[in-house]
Image (tube, one colour):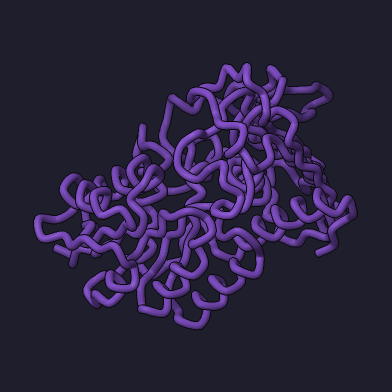
Length: 360
């Protein structure tokens, strides 16, 4: 039997409990041996639920990193601390999966990228929406050349009234922003991945604080506190790539719209186009007729990567990440790709503040 890959969890809050730890628990050749949180009770609870019998608990992540037996670290902390914890973990000889977004700005993300190159350790970012069946199907079609040259795309992460009211989501200092950096980042990552285009030229952005002071809220997770809602409630971007391709990015936690869709992409190429409305739809022209193809993704397995039928996206993400470490192959989500996402998000936020075009 192969040696178990030993994992340390830094940050035992919502995303660790909701995604990372339950999915890692399903990976047969990996085990969670250390847990760190500034609230010791959270780390202790996680250790009991997901850890090995002798799992260790820490309140200082630097103490966890001293454990030479740990192979991999998952960084599941607020956005502001992603960069320095990841850099320290890489320097300590650990492979790192950092929860999205990569960092609060491109300078911090660059430090992470440089550290990964310098140490030779693997770094990936938690963009689990790549690992959905619909995403994998479209990526396979894009890789096969079905769409030709993709020159226009729309990245959508729109919630009508679903403002996260827990943790530090509404805190701009800790998170770096609101829906744009929280869920818009997923839609943008999907879109860039489908296009295989990571060379932005310039962008224009707008960010709004229009509904954060509402008292009649009808929010999915209960009323938010207007005084604590310091991040934008919606943000939008227009991005032009070096090759002339255009991306429109839409994001919101609160917006008066019925067209609510989260972490989806739609794009148009020279041969065909596609979207994720109600499933996967591919459109084009063939033999003198317009066509729409709606593949039944429930009927078979996963086309692009070796997959297990019915496997959840987060489970697939964690399994393939551990396989990349085991087999010494590149992770599916490359840090260079996530760095581009952060650069564009930063450009949109900067443009929204200055009212000027942001050039990369």
